[in-house]
Length: 260
Ligand code: ADP
Ligand code: MG
Image 1 (cartoon, protein in one colour):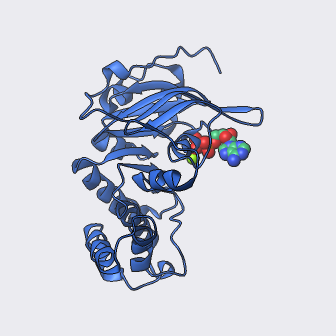
Image 2: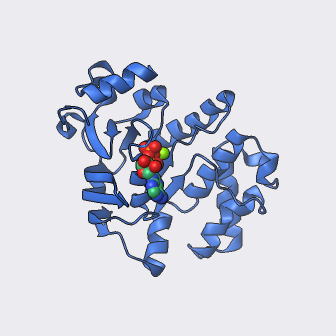
């Protein structure tokens, strides 16, 4: 890295709406020789919307994946709602259900209908009964604007519709926190807003969210805090206003000059 001064500024961020929900303490992770996450300290309050931005390869996806333990960590600690991340087994399945994840590539089950996609986790992990799971799925599908698509298969839907189904599927587990990893990056431009609007709505309703995105309009309007990552480190944290009008690190200035 160039001589960037590390200017973390969590003290400048918007006040925590309701206590700590996700806490990463001194998290380190390597892929072979690559030190992909370096001394990451990040606390996400209940109801907070944190937007993570940064250059490609900076570790944003890996960071998200450690939070629901799709990736292990080498050192440090992660806790959710006061409990350390479990290693494996039933506890881990429960944790994953508490942490909803929406990926760039919608990852719906291709051979299941939209409705089945949204009931499956409820039936298997939450042990819901079928009628209750279907009622909940239909209401969530309505909420994200795809209620009329319930009996179709994912391939019959547009990308924007599929991503909204993926959001409904994650919400069906009553997650404590939702992670979004570039949820609109694979979408045609005209479909980006319909997905961002659903995310805006969730944010307004108080969902705790970690969102990796290049959609700076979303960051400005929905985020309580922007976390800027580069080279495996959190280089800067600030409110969106502060970050976009007055980035402190050279790395962030350089990044913003390229994307804005
Ligand atoms: P970002 O999401 O910010 O683009 P990633 O977290 O995907 O960054 O990746 C960070 C770095 O780790 C990149 O250099 C990437 O090539 C590397 N990386 C990611 N996943 C793996 C993996 N499973 N094995 C080896 N290297 C990986
Ligand atoms: Mg990524």
